[in-house]
Amino acid sequence: MRSREFPPETQEVVSGVQWGSPAEVFSPAYWALQLEDSANPTHGYISESGDLVEEVGFCLLGGFSVKVELAEAYHRRLLDEGVYSDASPSENQIFRLLSEPAMVEGRSARYRFPGQRAERLALAVPAIREDRFATTDAQTLRRNLQTLKGVGPKTASWIVRNHLGSDDVAILDIHVVRACQTIGLFPARVDLVADYDELEATFLDFAKGLGARASILDAVIWNHMREFSPRIIQRLT
Image 1 (cartoon, rainbow, N blue to C red):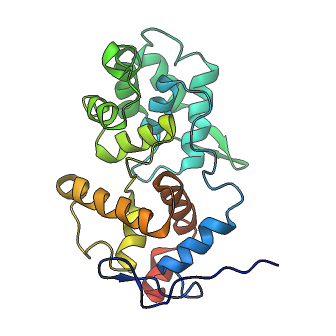
Image 2 (cartoon, rainbow, N blue to C red):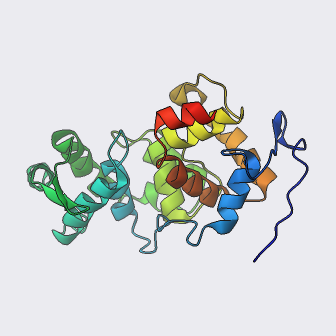
């Protein structure tokens, strides 16, 4: 048995957002409890290989309603076929590998965007070997990654977090945004392209208020929120 003391419910984590109770689903105190109880807080998404090409490949395959399990299955296929180690992989080869079905959680599944992602990967893999990507500065790397076709601020932040384990960026996908909206941290309407920097700064301040690493907080929130349907989230909030 463990006990944990939380600040008073009415105390603010950041301006305008109170801690609430750990028994209150999606409150800041609730997320603090989830962080403490998580056996593997990074969920394996902070890279151990240190290979930026592989990380870019994985993140380009994900997002845009592509489940992470599906992205992982096709990422493993490209890895096994040597796509990431090829100096200049063929777009046709990548397209063929992404077009064939893969087993995902015991079922045959197909990748949704084989043509689009084949083009992006064929351009990204050789580009990543350029000197401008050889940096451990999170902001510089994120800025350079956004010069790649199909890489916006969220995907670039995802790559940086996974590759560097950085707490200087936040991955503001729909799950994290929805969680932040439920506690009033983010406004009800957001434009992720126009507002990304401002929302990210708010999230990073929130992580500091919780006493948490931003790289772990967004992984925990993302993993937790994706188990809830939007309808359930609406009812809880």
